[in-house]
Image (cartoon, rainbow over all chains, first blue to last red; front, side, top):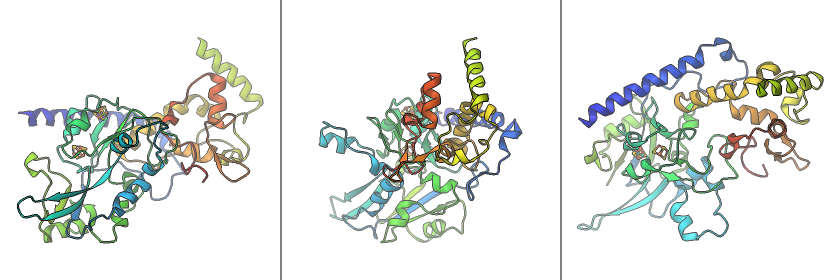
Length: 254
Length: 121
Ligand code: SF4
Ligand code: SF4
């Protein structure tokens, strides 16, 4: 039942999206251009592609934070400073984190796994379902992101996400990268390095940084992509598969 | 009515000093006009940027010419030490005209004000 409602809403949203695109394209003169950057996307992202990731936790080293550091540098999170007079503990708890390392232990057997956690880019994302404004959305190619121009900072999506993947920006920000705008009052999370997707690059920052080769990123719909091959070959699972969100990030060895 | 008057005043000014706000040392200073004729940009730049913002965020199109990062890239200047000055700093391109017109620029609460975004680079 709720599934039906969701589908209707999605359809409505995509029709609205098309209408918006049409108004943009209508005055054709606006699109004539000689100054575009080479390699940048000129056509809308399409659902032929579905981006996803495979993470091999058996390769993931205890205490290693290479992926997290690279993510924070890539997306300008390292530019954030603790506001003057803030409580360091609170800052540490609340500062944005797109990616975090998690250690899980099977209490019965004592087996420990280390894994990086980030937005799982759910096919049926609860963060999108609860968003009252349409700011939280799933792009055609499966990337779940926030349109900060529309986000009102209600943080419903943070509560709805089962993976604690989203962060809220509590204070004014004085330095941002042009590829990662950021300001007080909006929610954000991993976007699979969406600027790299749109500029014709094939990797994510975390994947490039991992010297253990634990992360493989690519197009799940392309059966010849590295990620599809490894997902076919190796045993893997979704985190909280019981929630039936059909996540785009899959883990091996947990 | 008021807005009409404002545009007229700006227009008259612009005819005499067509590059009044464009800062020496920026890439823009060397160019004859922006990505559209100056008169069009003066009136419609918010509309252009807003359209571009929606197609970029929702459809991933980054190759078009009306991007805010394009504005920053072209209008940024460097100081004597070779560091970028933010485009919304006093006297810089975005700020000087917006200050004159009394219009806030909310873009830069979230968007980078220099091409690199990193201070001192
Ligand atoms: S992991 Fe959380 S933030 Fe990411 S799509 Fe799923 S519900 Fe949304
Ligand atoms: S915080 Fe923003 S993205 Fe999240 S639910 Fe509220 S409006 Fe939507």
